[in-house]
Amino acid sequence: MKTWKKVLIGLGVITVVIGGIIGYVFIQQKNDVDNLKFSSIDMKLVKDGLYNGEVNTTLIKAEVQVEVSDHRIKDIMIIKHDNGLGKQAEVIIDSMKDKNTYDVDTVSGATLSSQVIKNAVSQALEKGI
Image (cartoon, rainbow, N blue to C red; front, side):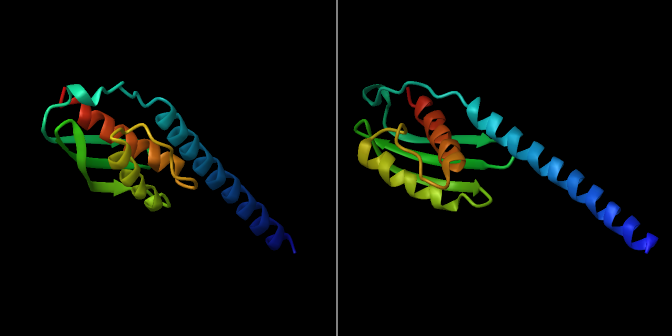
């Protein structure tokens, strides 16, 4: 009977440690996203061309290529998106092209990935000014 108690206590300790590590990683990810800097982009100042942007946070990484023509976002290609469960955020690029700005609503259920993609596009567009 004492062996079962030791096993249960050991499993409990392991569960608490793993839970703490996972909690820490998710808090760090949230802090990374909260600290992203977004530039105010006037598309009238963005020259025609292809521009790359890249963002690396604790859990989410995105690399994009943005094509600008006649001061409009013609295309956004996601080169890389390491996202865990945030793949659905990739549809955000359609809104960005339609509205001609990176500053669009995030995708529900993939808010952190949406913010990372938006920031990568913001960085890319800033290179065209």
